Image (cartoon, rainbow, N blue to C red):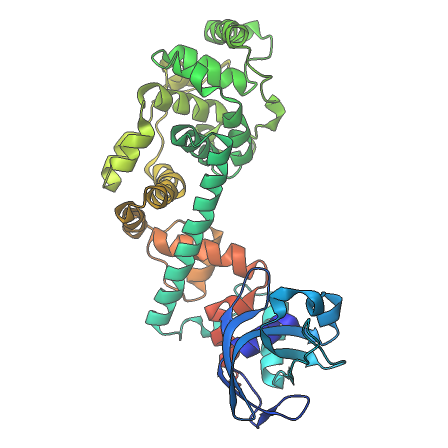
Length: 427
């Protein structure tokens, strides 16, 4: 398996005997090189000695030698600097474009490493490496979680940059779309994002000083003002009339299909009607919200900026036409913290990169290290396996680990997976 060959080569897990190429040359691996995740050879700038002669160049790995030709490397200039072909099975010779043969090494996997790897791949227990987690050095765990946190930052920053391309680099609009997505809290996230992408921000800006009109915009574009229900009351009918006027005035696109909104398995306080009313309140009083958020330096400042209410109608309603006990519909502190973790922090990091202001990136890290860890099935699983999960920095790192490594069974790129295989004694 090629992934296992990568692991063996990268970590120099070689047989306890002299290495020789298929043509009999003595091989000494000084440096296996730098792994390449893009197109081209698998490792760059390896340092090798063949029969005592130093070679510096690239290394390519395949399960079988014949895959060199199958992939067209013999006619690809990107592979002219390959100095060694590492294979699981040497079923033919290989050459560069000029016809020069390339030395090949058959690298076999130690039985115990193969067994442990198979155990990781087949385990029904999550995480499959649980047995070694509690014994890992704290410094190593901290180092790996820090690297995972940066990976998660980069992934979210990439998503933000992709949205910016679609919005002509308008940061305020992209911030709102991302914020709206996270107002879905998982269950309605995709629908909230689809809704936010329909909002004509420049049109809404013209009525930003009027909360009623913003509610009409938001609830109307969500498809929640389409039904003819006189028994929903005067407020519903007024919103419906206002939205029809605004839709004609600005030639608005068709609203979302209301069937996309999910209410099952959700507390009434999280119903989309309430969340949309809260977003309307935030948009109404939060002009230049993005700029103010980027300037805030503490968790308390951010919580104050993001604290929302609703219009009076929603203080005694969760949906149209059905009254409830009158109380303010404020967002809870744990929900606010999730908004900070999933919206504010990534934007601080992405905006810091955009502006080349390291202080913003550092503030993003500081905020994560200040907030409590998220409480979800991923953090509970890793905590139950013996890994300390104290801050949001830990929980974000573990979400990255779970989604990008564990769920993909990509244990060979994981430091915990490496330690699990190393515990076999093979290294």
